[in-house]
Image 1 (cartoon, one colour):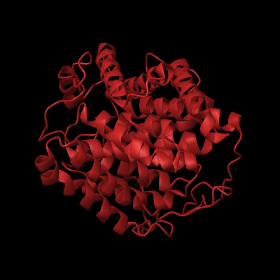
Image 2 (cartoon, rainbow, N blue to C red):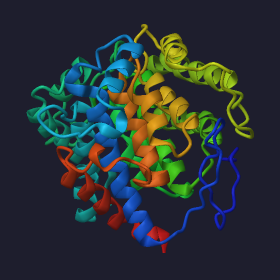
Image 3 (tube, rainbow, N blue to C red):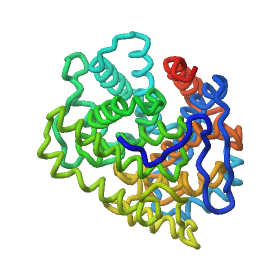
Image 4 (cartoon, rainbow, N blue to C red):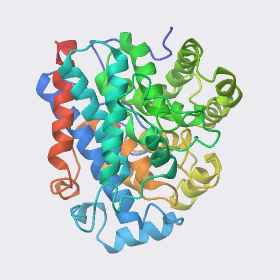
Length: 391
């Protein structure tokens, strides 16, 4: 597969962004840096989720402007002391941890049988459902998990779902890109992200969202410039289709629903001038809170931006492209809007953690976070499993 985004492995750089934040951030490939970034990715994803969720108040608020006013009254992102009981993580973090902890269990088992990993993921998703009190789990997630039978070899498979296009797969798959960080692991990444996605969202719009979140994390670990990630996704969709055909499950139904995700992304990349992945994104001259709300709504399936598999990673990506290494700008674009804000937040912030670590992030946003230790531990242990790839 040719990669639109060619880069020299010896000289990796972070994405260059438009606006005020245009600068290059060279990666130093030391193990401490990688460990730090892996830990930061899991941790900041959780922190952003808790912030965007705000105990459901902001996740379900349809006016981005109202959220921005409330944040301002609280003293801005820098003043937020993210801790219980006011700030708890949502179902997004609980399920992202489930994916990560299943990967860690599998890595330690040295099994080598990928279906064992799928069973472990199914088991961890089952367990995660006992920790959903007050976390607003999605209906498709809870229903999908209730159909899983982790003790059976094929118990990770559920029936095709015509209504399975939500963002539940996309919000919990970023760590897959951390487990498969190298270009030569792309086939494994495609397989695992699709299977994890369709354990609850067995519909292309749903499970391809899982692929997108994992793929962009995989690119972030490699230090690929962010403006070419979208073009890489369009190429990877071909591999995804080959995989779905090869697996042979519900091929006709998948084919029937395949193009929605693909076309939505093609349209988005065209709007931002990113189709060939060669130039920086083009944003409108005026792209404030109201304009973003309008755009997020426009790219959505049903008017709630970020609630589907195609637009949760898309809005996260749009926000990431426009924020450079500014956590505050990322929060304005990805955490505080009138859509499914915790889902776009966890996705974008995970990429931020991989690219920049905790640089410029107010300590109060994460130091007292619920599940802080678990999140950092998961990041650290996933890095331990793949450390040999970086030596």
